[in-house]
Image (tube, rainbow, N blue to C red; front, side):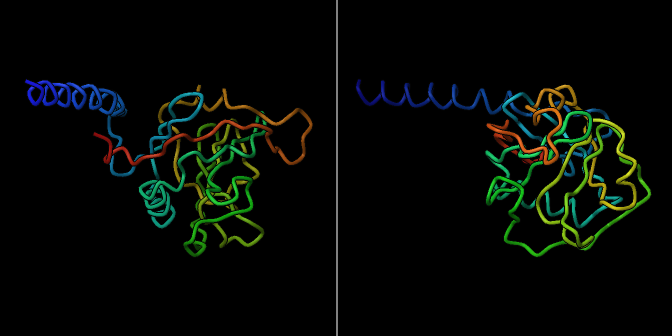
Length: 192
């Protein structure tokens, strides 16, 4: 009797535990390849990014690798400037000064314009210093065209990105105090 009850409880628990995981599988827009799509669950909601492997194959592979390793989980949007962009991806220092354990990537610049919803790879002064950090444009940022790698575009959740906590008006650095976070980042194809 006790053994049967334990088995029944274990079965009920496994069914209940599986239900939220099934609910997490994203509904992707038509034509979006789940193998090249990143799903970011943030403290404000879900953002889905289609990676542009046609423009930046090495950068796309890096983002997928880091997502699969859990590198981006609980990483803050450390720099968010109203009317410009939200930057994240420092899974080491959480403030924009850290990179992953992998070497920097050579730039994959294209003439693709930086407009609302475009995702770019952050870098230092050296054009070949992209590593793990990326940003989502809130608006046109044409001054970045040809100088930063376009890695993707938001296909769902720009309304969520718009809600991310911003730096105070007039902040030159865009640094956010008590920032929102990427709670979990996954490749869409890996989600069940």
